Image (cartoon, rainbow, N blue to C red):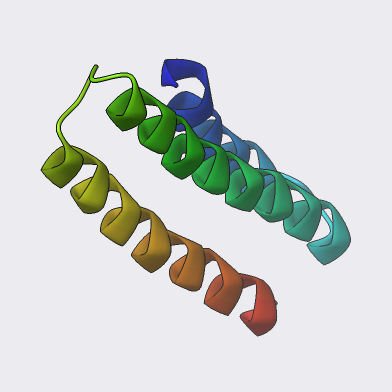
Length: 77
C-alpha cells in the first residue's frame, strides 16, 4: 500500500517534468491507477481487520476525490 501511495505523487511529479502533454497524461493515468490500488488495498486491509471500516471509508472517500481531480487535470491538458 505504501508503494502505491508513493506512486501517486511520484508519477504526477515525473509527468510534470515531461515535455509533451501525451507523456504527462501517461503519468497521470499511472497515478490514477495507483489511487484505485490504494482504495482496493484498504478494502482488503479492512476485511483482514488490519484497519477499521471507518478508516477504509475515509481512504475510499479521499481516493474518490483524488481520482476526480486527476481526471479533471487530464481533461484540462
